[in-house]
Image 1 (cartoon, helix red, strand yellow):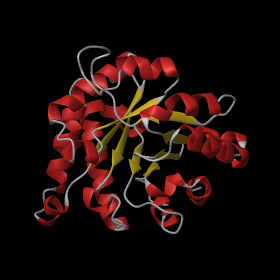
Image 2 (spheres, rainbow, N blue to C red; image 1 turned 135 degrees about the horizontal axis):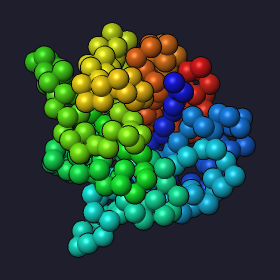
Image 3 (cartoon, rainbow, N blue to C red; image 1 turned 90 degrees about the horizontal axis):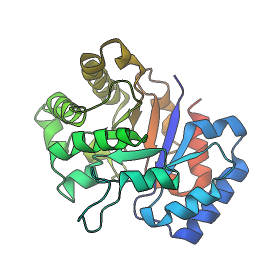
Image 4 (spheres, one colour; image 1 turned 90 degrees about the vertical axis):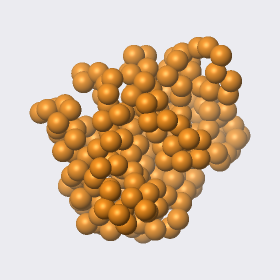
Length: 247
């Protein structure tokens, strides 16, 4: 299985910064490395990023999309329009969407279906809060979020899962290798339950304060198939260094 490094810019960078970033990144990336990289800019930068990536093997994706392609959904983004603009991936259920914007659990399965229906690849994010972990609820939370997100999945189409312990996102805290292995194994068990034999083929990414100085110890875990990087992805040198240290 390939090792993937995805960069979630969150609400950082405008179109000009995005173009400069992509130009710098493309100037450093060796051709085949691009197959393993994807960036997730703010929606307002999507056109600039898609244009700047022309001729590169690097992909891009959206940070969020609705489960309808059109309608009276003020402020939302259409899966179909993302696909038309050249996106390859869309994040689903990032903890900030769940925790800050209170996106309900039943949205996740609908989003996965809507994205797959238009040819996009969902990156389904799951993860527990610090209270969940303290009270021993990690496995239950992961199972519930996965099964909800996969409730309408097309088993024949690609999908990624990203494990992001909420307590490790943007905090500088990094889950231990033991915690990551345990959670990724729990995710794999659910994927095998849903997908049966094909469950071994679904990439599982780790996200949570991944940086150049800690990525290597996580990348060697056989349960980790890539990273969903936050803050460190805002610097193209750091972003590429994470990929290279992970191989």
